[in-house]
Image (cartoon, rainbow, N blue to C red; front, side, top):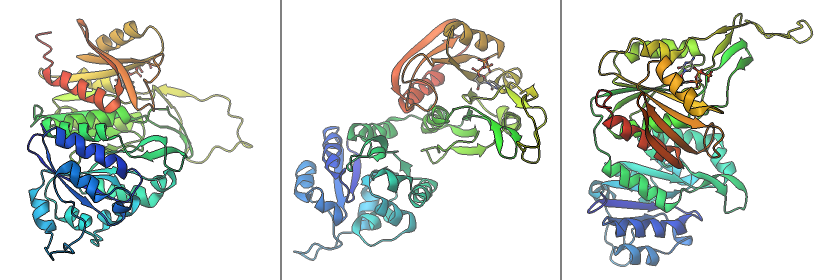
Length: 403
Ligand code: CTP
């Protein structure tokens, strides 16, 4: 899929710049034409000679060639590209991109790029978690850029945390899939519930669970890259979609989630219930904080929450597909098949907390997909993004009448 594609590889000044050589190599091997644009600082970390030798093109770094006075046109570069990938993207370059500080060739090229832009942040964990970096990354995402989230692991500082640039193979994979994704879901609406729900006890306390929403958002990105018009109704989560087309409606409680989903459900061709919905909610949430010294609260009066999947699936019309999730700790298969039937779902994705690497918070998942007839796919342990893409491609091909 990369054959003949024009890729601008932007390199900024971070230790991870050494990985850009591998990324360039992978792109070239796959048949892409690669034009490297480096910031002045990037040249301190990897030489233009290495990059031009790998790509067969002189590296662009300055507005003018010092020798010939030749003007390097960022506008032409921006028009030439089928995609621009900035890897590594330092905190400083991300800030400049977010605010249009066009003081080097890479940022001017970014501002002129008409093609999709992929940004692979790389920095130390404190910089990564600083609110200004998070806000700048959110801004870039809101402008439609694709953020390739950094991985967790040992950093150049030897500290361990989030900030390590994603591996070149994975960045290559993101680009390759971007060009190979089909539009099988074009014109279709997909509704996804994601994350936990918070059930208020009083203004400062709630009943909740450990769901992070990662799987739901990965499904949303995968469905959007197949051309679907995707809306995620999410409980309180930190994750955001990478695909710029995904719409997000934030809610807190199960009731709010059902209310938000109800009008969207009728329009949706596919609905995926991946949220970890609290089954119970306090019967009498207090409007003021419950005070320890004034209350001897030993029990909470709870009432059942609505079952969103069962409620909506009960009014499914022909042609609508509903998919549930079952996260189990024991009797996995029986429980999953029971939920599939009881909630009137077409498919259920079962994962087990007994499998290491699957479940809440992990970046990986291992699942089995059931239809009423039995197992239709066993997806081995892989990243939640890859797992989501497999699930979406199963859904695009699934026809309940022929299974
Ligand atoms: N679900 C839902 N609304 C609820 C509870 C669950 O929409 N109130 C959905 C989940 O999003 C998931 C499926 O139903 O797709 C199964 O969720 P799970 O919590 O495993 O099932 P429960 O029916 O709550 O059963 P239990 O907690 O007893 O395992």
